[in-house]
Amino acid sequence: MTSTTNPQSLQDEIADLEQRLRDAKFRLQAQSQTPPTPSPPTLPPAHLHALLLLSDSALPLGSFAFSSGLESYLAHHKPSSNNTSTISAALSSFHTFLRLSLATLATTSLPYVLSAYRNPENLYNLDNDFDASTPCTVARRASIAQGRALMTVWERSFRAGHTSSNTLSTLQPNSNEHPADVEAIDVAINTLTTFSKSLRTHPDTTHAHYAPLWGLVTRILHLSAWDAGYLFLFSHARTVLSAAVRASVMGPYQAQAVLASVELQERIRGLVEEGWEVRVEDAGVCVPVMDLWVGRHERLYSRIFNS
Image (cartoon, rainbow, N blue to C red; front, side, top):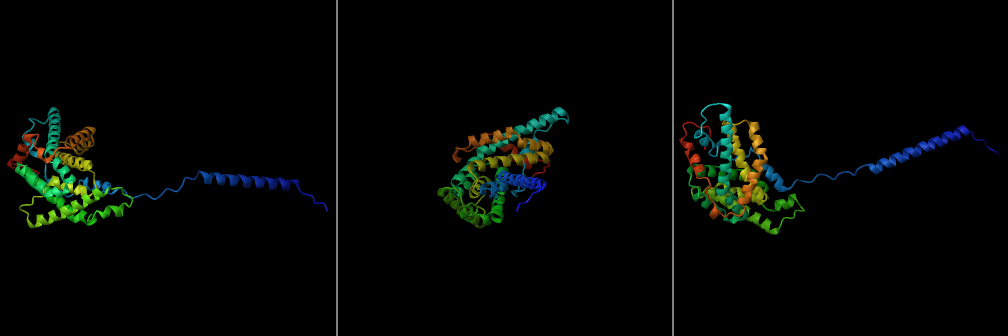
């Protein structure tokens, strides 16, 4: 029996098979070009989170009430008239003050920050030495106020998440932290806990100065020594610039431009490098007139800052 096949139906079948083949090749090519599914994001390092917390301008350390001597400096350098040249001179004068203020902080306080970071068990001696080596009453009182505010922040906000150095291992199972660093953090936590109790029971003999406590707290929060020192000076610059805005020396955008400038970055970086190996025994005031400006703040007839 001989069967006849319609040529048109064969052509239609061939065309259908070719179309199906093209569709299959297209799907295969699309699958080969599909990028792999990205892995879920990992948690940021613990020190990065702490760095963001400590750099927050809303951190309740009482810095808003202090001008770091700027208000007194401005009162002793009043412009003669309100013209363009006077405004430029005022801005230039402010930049001079900021440079001198940072230099003073770097030579008087930064060594205590780094020493407390590296040797947390020496907190009591560092606190006592800092108090004895700060002759300016106003500066000493401001340091104690900010230090005790930092202690309050630690107790009410940070301590619950850093009661043990095992916290880092819980957050970062693959952490490469050296056992000696973990032990030092444990020592820092125990020292700060004991110091806090001493501050409550013996407030007259326990001062709680800001600089050594900053070094200790940043060690507990897993910041590097460099970050601790840099952030200490950066926070001071931000406080002075904030005071300048409230004192109508400059506008907020000008202040932000100064804070973001390469010049300020290099200045702070250079001060940290200069003070990296300075011992607390060698710490001292490099700009003596700064103590005069700070100390005369309380003698101003009118003022907008507590200190």
